[in-house]
Length: 508
Image (cartoon, rainbow, N blue to C red; front, side, top):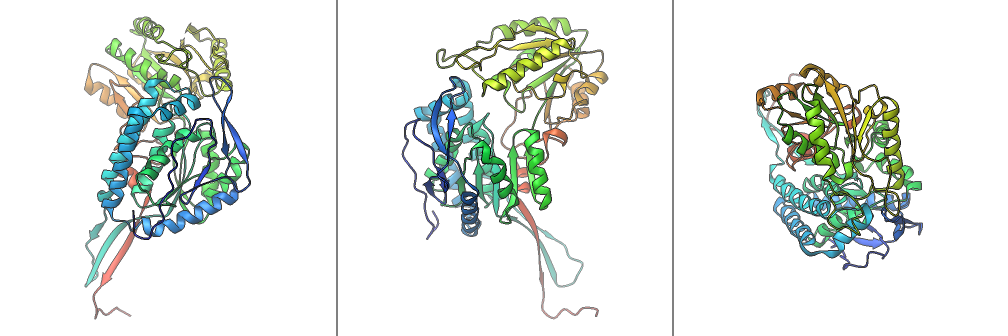
């Protein structure tokens, strides 16, 4: 805690059904408009609790307070910032070990299975520790000067208020990613969580507050869908907001990018994915199948890095298909409330399940072969889907051009490495990919030709570690990078500072 700095009031754990308030300048407050919205359990369709909905006035207050808090937080010694992050990481670890409320929140809001709950919490703790280590690597440089008597320094400084928007699908982990690097660099943050998962995303806010993050440094403003466009545009365009980061759909990302462009504001976008896995003719089929099933079906395929397209050399396609079907049929799915050990539970809305089934049915009408899946939903709210697998898909089909975001695997058959690369690159999504081959040099050569921000050789598409510069290479996957020093570069600014000796004369 900094001397003279207001501390946060950390509330004790309450019931899941209790309302969720806004968190502005270290205080839990209702919306200035007294507006709330219901947060629903996607598995049952029933209301879990009421959440305060931030208004434009609330955003104005939060941004102003974050701007004020920036003055002190940006000057806080790096060791003090590091200690807060390390303490917060330990707190998140304690949630993973024995916090019933964290598990209940994630289970209720996103139908999270046991494994997804643990992954969210443990990865988030690791991300905080990795971010803590960055704090003494925010460095400048000294540049030799041609002008006599001059010293040139290039400093790297925090920018100010960062507006962060994080999604529902990995609510703790992706919230940690949205706020950690900006904060450790000395910025302050105004966070807009998803309307589907306010309490899940507040877990990360709670941990940082308990760890001693000063008031005003992190503000939490959930908003009902009807008001989201207006408050988002207000925040993006606010003159105190210096950076924006958004993880979500390319449709919304395009809108935010337009608002930011109108005021020439820098953004980091991680948007959609349509990740391909290229299975070459010499691939270890068992390894490839394991990675494809993990990459495609984790969290029921609701991850931007999920495997959606499997591009298989025709010479091994039938063998791969057989092995894939065996593995996929072994995956347990169902209602995680009734069957706690299932690997796959429900999707985040019933409308999402219907959209996904419609896309599969349309692919079949275009000539794809459905080899697994019953084209039905299950569960009390129609959100549970079995894994669906399509064979003989091609890039002309509609399912090839849009993110599925569900438990669907599409198989594409090709006759050469060159064709596999061509199919992989015939997409506007550029987030990640994988290549499988026993010949590492061959796989590396193929990987270099695939347009993607990350390409994994003999591993799943669903893989990233905190130090890595995660992000796409443009198109519908967005631009900018989270993670490691790349994240530091996104959320700091270079400043040229020159020092001149006395007595220098100039040619004028």
